[in-house]
Structures are given as C-alpha cells and as structure tokens.
Amino acid sequence: METTKVGIREFRAGLAEFIAAETPVAITRHGQTVGFFIPAHGQAEADLAALRKVSAGLDQLLAERKVDVEEVAAEFKSARRRKAPARPKGR
View 1 (cartoon, rainbow, N blue to C red):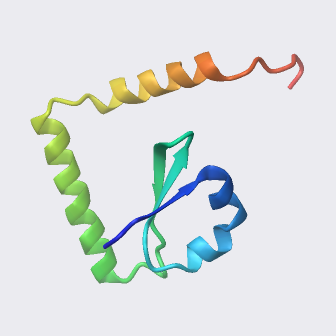
View 2 (view 1 turned 120 degrees about the vertical axis):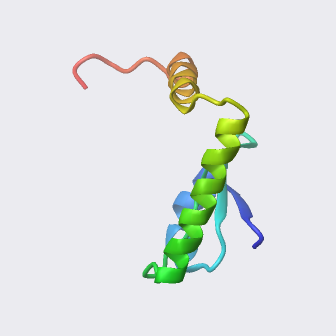
C-alpha cells in the first residue's frame, strides 16, 4: 500500500479529506517524517488483525536491533524542548 507524504500544515488543513482517504499518510515537518495517520473506516476485524500483525513485526524488529523505545521517546522529547520557543509565564 502506497503512503502519501504531506507537510503538517497541509495535513491540518486537509484533515477531513485524509480521514476519508483509503491510504495511510506520512506527516512531515521540515522534510522529516514525524508521524503516520492510518484511516480506520470503522476498523473491520480484518483491519485489526492486520494492524496486530504489523505491530508484532515492528516489536520484533525493534527487539532485534535492540532499540529502547523509552530511550528514543525521551531523546525526542529532549530535542523538542531544546527547539521549542520559551512560553510566556502564566500559561
């Protein structure tokens, strides 16, 4: 199944169309993929089974490559904080 790549602003602007679409969307920010949107359309049992299979495959791949998901998430949060502009106090 082919994935459509769109910028985050385009994704926000066209959210209704992406929800109705049949294909997954890779969401990018500054050219880097930051997430995926997979339209559910009611989640038929076959869709759930396919997602479970893909999830198990991803878990296996991460384990084989000794990727610590919590460490990756912490690194992402840290990098995001470094790049985020300071918020005004009181918010």
